[in-house]
Length: 357
Image 1 (cartoon, helix red, strand yellow):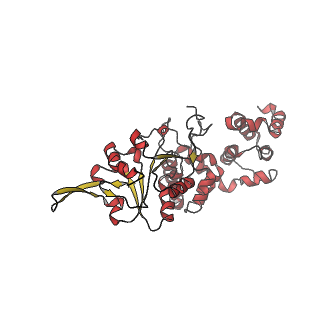
Image 2 (image 1 turned 135 degrees about the vertical axis):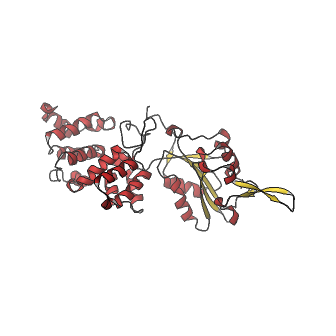
Image 3 (image 1 turned 90 degrees about the vertical axis):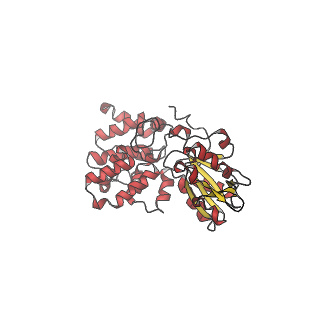
């Protein structure tokens, strides 16, 4: 797969998507993005902005036709009429914020039954009008995610797709600070920001931490699974190391769990990256295989043309083996090669250490 060509659509952040939805409430938007990036959570800021609205989270894949509305006999008029399910909140008569979660995984008959709600003018469920001022949006995954999403042409014509980008480590950390995420998880994401990379990004083919639709994975690191792992970390004092590892592997996958366990075990021995950038000659050196590995590979992801000289100065203080591990991977990593070979500090290291390579 050429990850440079996977997705050519313009993307928005979750915050941008919320602004768009609130500004144009008569449109019906489909938030599309890879698994576990927080699409469904967008209902919270929208509801917060509209405190007088009812709100409803509808799990469309779990619906059968009878879960949407049921025919009820009107004996006086000798007719039947549809009564909507309470879950939609339409019975109150108040405007409602409805998230049709995972709409694109719903059964075709259920999707068809919900279609009238997607109209920009005179939306309804059955024959019951949707209250004026209501907001209705849906979520789903990308076609390239390979998780069974399907939208027919007449559905697509009723909606505006918004392709939602995966949050960066910095964006996720801003959210985490306000949502009781364990400090160790925040520290890990700060130290290993490529755990928040996307398979749609160039150069992530070998990133074993994240979701890859073309690989078999029992678990992987995502904003959603990171939050689940955070819950485990809050309780880790009640667990032995085997139990902790089992929980973390189940939440975020074996590669991410191994790196996180190393960070947990060696956190007191790791230098802060900011210290490496600001004072590379005096920043604390890691001791032992685990700490060195965490520092070397974590630093590799964070080296830029601006901090490359400081990073190479710090790396030159490590044992020769770890200097080589860093420099070889620095030179091989596609998205870092230009930084390496345009760096005077890296060229100097190569000249001084040819005997090591």
